[in-house]
Image 1 (cartoon, rainbow, N blue to C red):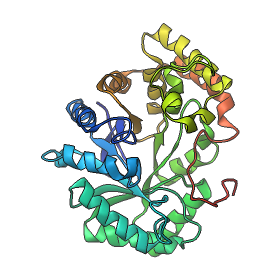
Image 2 (image 1 turned 90 degrees about the horizontal axis):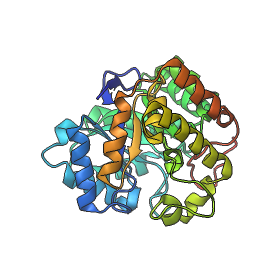
Image 3 (image 1 turned 45 degrees about the horizontal axis):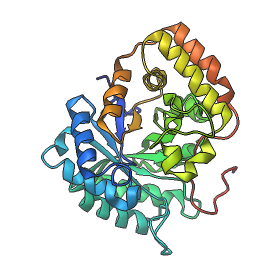
Image 4 (image 1 turned 180 degrees about the vertical axis):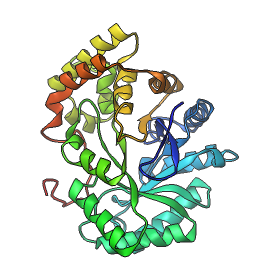
Amino acid sequence: MQFRRLGNSGLKVSALGLGTNAFGKRADYETSKQIIHYALDNGINFIDTANIYANTESEKIIGQALEGSRHNVVLATKAGLVKGAGANESGSSRYHLQTELENSLKRLKTDYIDLYQIHTFDPATPLEETLRTLEDMVRSGKVRYIGASNYFAWELMKALGISDRLGLNRFVSTQISYSLADRTPENELVPMCIDQGVGIIPYFPLAGGILSGKYHSLEQVPEGSRAQTDPNFRKFLDNKTISLGEQVGELSNKLGCTPSVLSLAWLMHKPVVSTVIVGATRMGQLAENVKSASLKLDTEAQSKLDAMSSPYRYGDPFAFYRLPGQDERQ
């Protein structure tokens, strides 16, 4: 397994990270535990979750599964999206973040979070309040590094500027949808992160499974696929993305790997990418995707992937999560 610095920080993370959105939802406790232990045994040290995944079940499962192994893991969680119906159960206010950190620590059965991330920008809370709260968390020892997620480039740059002005800890990373089916971060966010030393952690690196080559038509979707089990996922599926998945599949056949491995390796060859988080609902998926960390792509292969995915550099992001009522076209 390759290890890289998380942005300009001294923290080293595995090139492939484990995403746990499905734990407690599409993967039960025993399956999730097996996946976590397989990840650790195969060099993955970065595990990413959030306070809202599977209605908190993801954090609970991870906490139980990591007992005795916590010291081997770079554990990341998030807060900021809607947690409940209460007036203070979302956003990045001091009130909400402190409450959610304490709850996450209990569920994860740990005294500290390695990377605490703001799940999305909160226009209703001054950035200084959010950043001072995160600074207090770092100083308390309950948080070691801080990151952002679903921030526009200007929002992230504004946060970094405030941190620099006030002498506060900076965001060392940002999570964003980034894949062959979503290259929109390359327009503004990627150059900004390179300039500022912020590491990118792509989510949806396989476009929810579309880049695995499993989809061949809109009418017939594979048994047990996300398009079948999650009706909301259908909005991501169209003929263009299905065609892209098939093109990636054709190239992967020539290179002797699976489309998933090829798509993940393409991201890992981007210098700004610190770790690529990939989910799994069964061990076989993770066992296959681990191969991406050792796949070397030559210039020709990278150029072909760049060319076939070039239409996805412009237009709407594949996914972008904001608080209700936020204008996503700010």
